[in-house]
Length: 446
Image 1 (cartoon, rainbow, N blue to C red):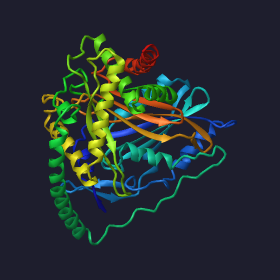
Image 2 (image 1 turned 120 degrees about the horizontal axis):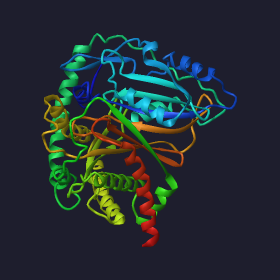
Image 3 (image 1 turned 135 degrees about the horizontal axis):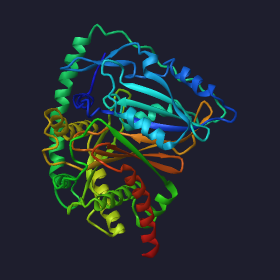
């Protein structure tokens, strides 16, 4: 058995019926030429062999004081499911189905993942929805897992990769727990000193992410949630994002943040809910991980300049904040970064467990994260991957999440919101696309 890390344990502690702590991805594929109905059935059978399961997808969480991963034999009929849309299924119907699936918590007594293969999609396509608990994987880990299933060769049929079977319990588990506990205490003491020194500088001057978090306004996104979810998707062309970034001396990530900022500004203005202080986004930053590290990301708070009507000034403010935020975080050691993540998660976890999360001031308004899948087209048993819509978790007080996945020459934005507190979520996706156009027009006319 292996102990969960403190960060992984925190995500388990935050789990509730209304706020399940899993992340997911919706992938759509174009069937190979000549493929019939048997293709998705064969794919379902291939996945049901469960030969591709790395740790911890072959384990359950056991224990309460010091949770650990206990190896088990997963049930393929439970974890790998075949679903169908009424032909010809539309993208709207697909999004509705996956939003319902995403709102259902995972069974914590089983390995914490599900794979749904969905047939019946129009345009000679099918889809796959994969979800896993955040204690078992983060966004980058999920992308790395999915990439192992795919190939860059459209003509090569690759069986699912085989991994080692679950190992038996170690007879020295008690000793391992004691050693790990002592090590964690020592690491925590070392990290505390480093973080304390860093926080002094991080709280000073302009573009301070620490000060930004303390000035977060409350918005309609920051309320108590229900279990039900919505999904909206926007696809942005990478060359357009790069052109804006090059013309303004910023980055592609800055431009996408500015598009998201423009979208929420317009959305809240329509409802008369735009605060007189800038909205704040939590921006995750990953660091190098080893094979035993399941969550390796922390984050900083970035102002989205939603009080600024000039789109280029908004982009410049975002660039200044992200440049400083990433520089300060990446100057920390991995040990300090892990404990900095714990510090950031602690008020969320405590507030979630006590029900006080919507009563205390928010530390940010929503999260905007990004990962890169591949610059090359990828294939699953010869079927071309068209796009990936990422889906993250929500918790009380934080009812909107935006996750970006870069794939080939596009960036796909997945907007996940609480169905009952954020009406017309699709507007945010549409407005993000139009905000990119506004940036292009501003550059042309400047």
